[in-house]
Length: 106
Image (cartoon, rainbow, N blue to C red; front, side, top):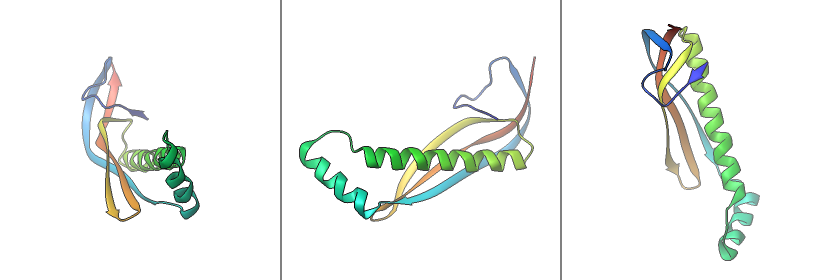
């Protein structure tokens, strides 16, 4: 499955727009990791625990979006975007969305 942020696929012709696809996940902070992150704010630097958590959440959201596109018969997703929002204190939603298409090479 090709997933691109562009509106086109160079070298490919979009034959059919199949529609919006999305995938999301809600991640909450782990108390142990939160304590370590709190200590890190004192000395500065990257909070690796949060970086890892958000990377995993983005990957889950993208995987769920791809599954939805495959179920529609798509072979590509164009105009893919990622967004995040806080749903409650200590929990964030990550959503991946784009347009599922059927494309063929020239």
